[in-house]
Image (cartoon, rainbow over all chains, first blue to last red; front, side, top):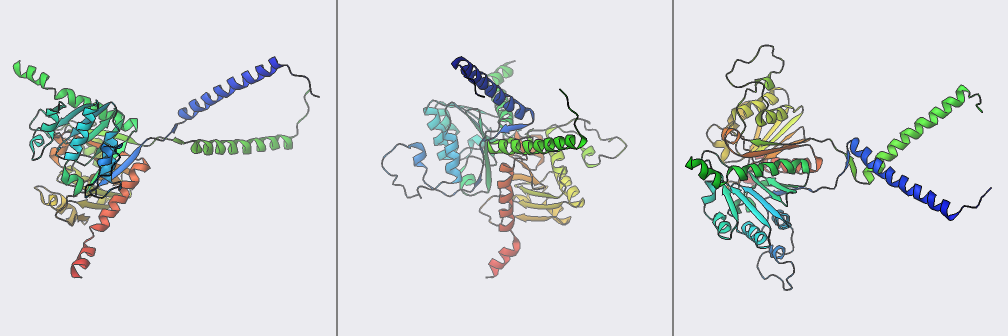
Amino acid sequence: MFRQVSFKELMKVFGVGAVALVLGVEWLDWLMRRLGFRRVSRLKEVLFFPSPQTCVEHLFTPARSFPCACPLPHGTETSFSRLLGHLLSACVSLDLCVFSFSHVELSRVVLHLHNRGVTVRVVTDRDYMAITGTQIGTLRRAGICVRHEMSSAVHMHHKFALVDGRKLITGSLNWTLTAVQSNKENVMVTEEPELVRPYLKEFQKLWEANDPANHKQQAAK
Amino acid sequence: MFRQVSFKELMKVFGVGAVALVLGVEWLDWLMRRLGFRRVSRLKEVLFFPSPQTCVEHLFTPARSFPCACPLPHGTETSFSRLLGHLLSACVSLDLCVFSFSHVELSRVVLHLHNRGVTVRVVTDRDYMAITGTQIGTLRRAGICVRHEMSSAVHMHHKFALVDGRKLITGSLNWTLTAVQSNKENVMVTEEPELVRPYLKEFQKLWEANDPANHKQQAAK
């Protein structure tokens, strides 16, 4: 009933089995994609504001050994600390498109990323970049490239950020203290490519459209 | 080599085969979900503004036989017409949370839905509901329930809408003519439950928090 199987035959069976398994898994993966199935574990998070004021020092200096002595509550995660965490996760680039920017802690995040070697590009509104407490001057003095809407008849009203070209942070929140601490606001954080891609394209469009070099050339014509 | 197969045997084989097929498909579906795969065909759309002015009459009266005689361009799809289309797709409910609302065409959409029997609820900002050309009075006179942020120290700065509790429309766009026709704005439309659910919860929270009945009771205490 049982016959002797040689080592060569056994290896052949194992080899064919392994190839069949790999091809089978590949085929199943292809079939699932073809049928509209997809592995989904992509980030989708919604943050609501106002956010309570807490200490966020640990996000800037995670390795420090002594506890922070500031009077703010510690160890609590809030919408604001989550927002900072997402921004600070940038390794390569931060593209920021924001109507008004006067929040000191958010400015600190941008400067921190710039100092860490992250490429930061900012597009803002022409009129609102001059509001009381604006951080645009601070960013420019630090060497960050900021462009503003060229037309005075139009408001650059977006409030979105792109982290490493793959994480989108967008919503109603302007980067001001009132927005973070008082207003009813929302911020969505997602890595869904179908949502991220159009914002990447829009940023690039605005970045190029508001290049001062192009406008100087046009003015000289 | 071939033997006669009775009709009963054939039916037995078909029966077992059919049950095995159904169970197999069910098992595959379960396995895919278990492994983190999911059928994805959910709406994800991003609209950018300003949007060119075109005729949107066909969205309100799709069945009319004669062509519209207005001087605006016809037959062109724009970000604004897409936005109107998404709003007009409401069958059961429209929950709207918007900072400032003075756009006549958008007001017409809300009234149209209300007249069609769609349950409309609006939450708006206390100060901005009195801006020039505000549509809040028009909605209230038509019998639509509008609530406003009760605190004067806080701005209700959201700009989102929920269609039938499953389609989320959110972004930087206020419902004003300047926002639609002049500003650089974004609107995201999605049916991703992980994104829709938090906004549904936030709307309900704001709706209850700004119920005038509760505030009258509190004031009387």
